[in-house]
Amino acid sequence: MTTNLPFERFLGDLNPNFKHGMKKTRLYNIWCAMRYRCTCTFGDKYKNYGSRGITVCDEWQEFIPFMEWALEHGYKDGLTIDRRNNDGNYEPSNCRWVTMKVQK
Figure (cartoon, one colour):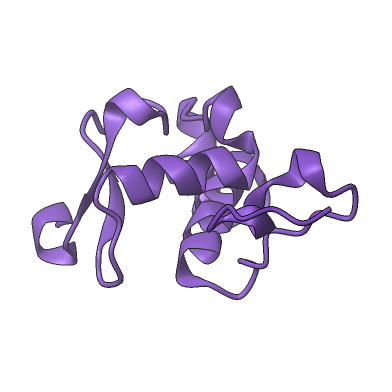
């Protein structure tokens, strides 16, 4: 199936062999690291995230919704994801993109 949409490679519902093509990007690595911190009990960061009850929202368990949120909310190379409420979860209402200087 061929479409004229600029982001047709992201439209998984139109392509049963869908791959987002973002695996080697910085944004994909941020998404993986975020999920890892909250779920990997043997990871070195788990004690500061998952063991404190911090989770990744259901919506962001899939990369595409996270990517869409990130691009609509100011993601740029050089920025890092930040939770406004340090005790809150990774979810759209609690996250923003900031420099490392702001996050520290």
